[in-house]
Length: 475
Image (cartoon, rainbow, N blue to C red):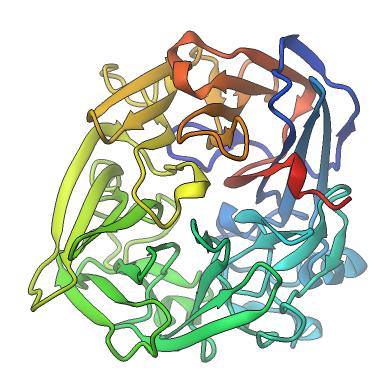
């Protein structure tokens, strides 16, 4: 049993594709909640090699399909090129996280993607994402893999990395994305690009970063794109010893970089800061001549499974993540960026109403421990934060429950911000990880779930998820 989410989400490898029709429901699912809650996480196809980390498990996608107050559940592995090759060989062929030097010669030239980090709907497809590779394209209804390496009909190179966290533009609906190490393994290049709702690439630029960093997420506004570079850096020596791609290098700085959207990238500016960490964006927007970038930030290495370059033990306090607001002036010279802590909540996986990815927003949602409990992680909670009032509301889970990343689903296409439902999966630690889908009224989170969808088994692991409205499904 392994913890992969810092606020307590626990999983054991499942290695089974599951289908449950007409799940048991306690309470009532509102008629206005109709669509699909998709999620993906690492579920090792075979036991991980010694020294490897849980992030290297194969992508296992799940779907709670909600219609008419009823729920069907389905899970499927993504049939990546790696998965299929290992399935034929009946053994591990790529044994170390993002270290191709350890690969079996039989997989040379195949995509190393595990498609295990995030899923997002694009046109009539579900894209399963892993930041070192191109997406895999799945059927929205069946979760069957349609294309193991999806290149948007040849518009992106087959070996083009694609972020696990693309943003949907709030005004155009375009998909804005990037890929780092874009000019090949270990390169300092970042390719930034935009794909419209019809699937056509309409813009792209290429920029360089000060060093090869794990650029897991980024920020997009109506006019700008921003990156936050952290000292989770490529470690060639560690890889030569047979280890993983990254280590935490406390001697490197962090950098906030920003550039014009739709430009050529030559205006990109990197502003140096102290060695801060953190991986995920909550939201971003512009106000006058200021750009605001809300994200979780740590003082040190945020990942217990990533080694420190100097060999020091993991520092849990320094790796604890809190929501911060980064700010920078879009005019004039910037020698530093602003940074402000927003809430006393440990929040490594914050989410917003995804209709507001590129514009000002008010609410955020996250899993976190109870900030009033002196025993860290004793109680898992869901939280809604309100930037306007700088307040938050909590729902506290029982002590035998751990929680996955929550997801916001609007009540309708034109519902106001925050009007809708919060969905999240609970794992019961005292029931061999048997799982439930919890459905809350997002505006009354503290009242607890309005409906609980019970699975008879453990839900497949989750890192990130996505909501697909009923009107977004193919006819």
